[in-house]
Image 1 (cartoon, rainbow, N blue to C red):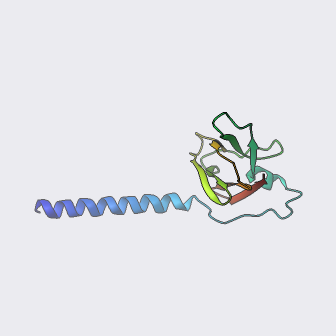
Image 2 (cartoon, rainbow, N blue to C red; image 1 turned 135 degrees about the vertical axis):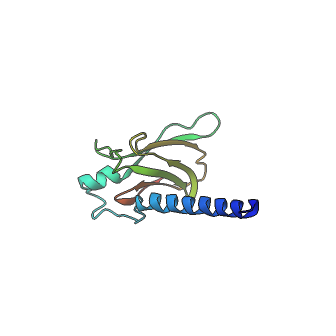
Length: 141
């Protein structure tokens, strides 16, 4: 086999490995948008998955610390090899302003961002659970 053929085979093998790894990773991600049955009265499973958005005071540079914790009412989402939050996103007026990717067992469902909120009307946080889909909370400013 000549060098060119060997390089082609190596490149094809690397591509197959990358595609297989991505497909395997996606098996663990539920991409379904979830909504609580009754937004005014969340059950324990809904509380566990719904992001809680907490704002602190704006700093001297004009940024507001925004903390997103996954879980409400004293119920925190677990982080086990079989059940974890794999991503948290923050949107300001539907523009993505922050994303945090999390690893099972090593990191837990919490993220913090510093964002300029001048003229922003709505903050939206999304949490992505590998088993139970994508959950959303909004805060009107």
